[in-house]
Every structure is written in structure tokens, then in C-alpha cells.
Image (cartoon, rainbow, N blue to C red; front, side, top):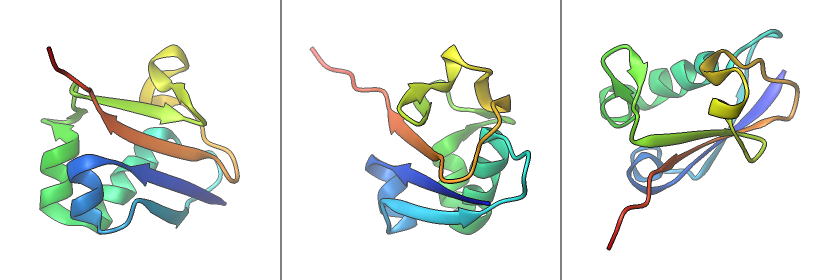
Length: 93
């Protein structure tokens, strides 16, 4: 099935595209999609997304404009034509 991955900030610059279309197996999870993005982007993208074996707490992961933390986290299943977006937390004063 086809899903979209949308990135912003340093991750987008490392991938050189804001949106990537990916073919993933049925019953894929948000985490599997992110793992595929890391395979495509290599070590730099892995460094930007991961903290050890977990997705960085400095990122917000969205599925169809809903924070996956309000769903089933990175284990949330994706459907055909879903959009996964990874955004950095915005901080400032």
C-alpha cells in the first residue's frame, strides 16, 4: 500500500524532499514507515529521528494530522494513502 511521509526542518533537509511516497506492506505501523525512512536517509536521518532505539522525544509524530501519542503510539497501524508527518517541537521565549 502507498503512504506519504512528510518532514520538516533538519529531517526534510537531510532527505532533500518534504514529502516521500512509500510502498509498505499491509498491516504496517507508523514505526515501520519511520524505519523505512531511516533506511532511505541513512545515518544522518537516523541521528535526527532516533534516541537509541526509540523515536526522539524532541519530535512530534502525526498520522493524518493527529498526534500518534493520542492513538496507539508508534504501533499505530497505517492505511492506504495515510500521511505520516514528523515535526520538531517548536521552542522559544
